[in-house]
Image (cartoon, rainbow, N blue to C red; front, top):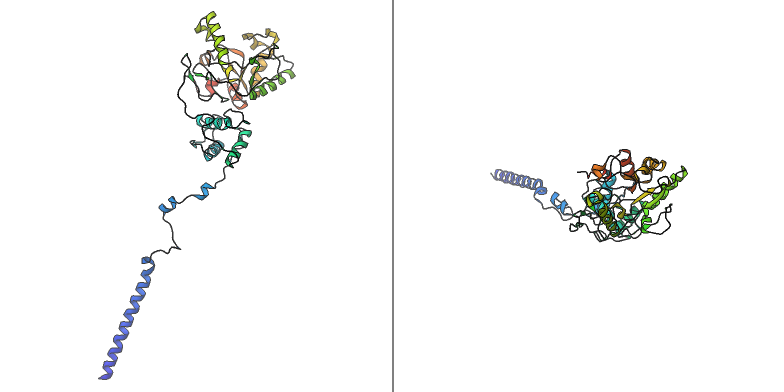
Length: 353
C-alpha cells in the first residue's frame, strides 16, 4: 500500500516537472519576439533613416566640367556645372540645360571676381575660381554681382531693358535694349588699323572681342587683304545723338531701318565693330560685301568668333537692312553654327516672332 502511494507521488512529481520544463521551453521560444530591442543593437526604421543627416551627401565630391560651356548647351557637363553652383549657394534647377538662370548664375559669380571676364560663359578661368569657391578659398554672396530679379524697365521708346547686359550672347535689337547706364568695364583698343588717328571711344571693344579681332585682322593680312576697323563701342548718349540726327534727316521710321534707337544698338555692348577697306574709301556701304575683304569676312569671320549680324535676305527677322560691315562677337561655338546655317542671332537663340 505504501509502495503504491509512493509510486503515485513520484509519478505526480515527474509529471509536474515535465510540465514546468515544457512551459520554460515555450517561454524561451517566445522571448526574442517579446523582448524589447537592446540600446546597443538598434535597427532604425525606414522613417528614422530618412530623418538622419546624410553625411555622404554632405561630403560629396563636386566635379567641375572640363569643357567650356555657354547658353544653349545641354547634357551631363551642364548638369555638373549646375550641381557645383548649387553647392556654393545657388538654387538652380538641375536640368542639364544651360538656360537663362544658369547664365545669370555664372555672370553673377564672374562679377564678384575682378580677375574674371563677365560674359555668362563657363571657361577655364571661371572653372578655376569656382573650384576655389567650392574649397572655401573664396566666398560669394549669391545675387550680389547681378541681382536675380529686377523690376521690369523700358526705354523711352517702350523697348524692354534686358536684365543681364554683360552676357556675351546678349540679344540686342528692337525688342531687347541695354540699360542707359551700361558701360562695359573691360573696354580696350584692339591693335588693328583704323582710318583715323584720334583715340576716340569708337576704337574700343570689350577685351575678349578685341583679342579676337586682332587675330581676324592678322589672318586677313596674311592673305594680302586690307581691313580697317571703323566703329566699335558707342555709348547710349552717343547713339541717342546719332539716331536723332538720322531721324531728322530721313524720318524716324526710315531711320530705324538702318540706325538704332538708344539702348537698341549692339555697339553699346562693346562686342561689335564695323569694318571697311580702302577699296570702298573706308566707307560703310553695301559694296563692301562684294570686295575681296568683304567676301573673306563672310567666309572666315566665324573662325574668330564673329558673325555678320545683319545678313542679306534676313531683313524681316533682324528688321535692319543688310550690313556686310557690321561684325558682332559671339564666340567661336555660336559663330560657327550661325554662319554655317546662314541664320541670325535671333534664330540661333529662338527669339524670332
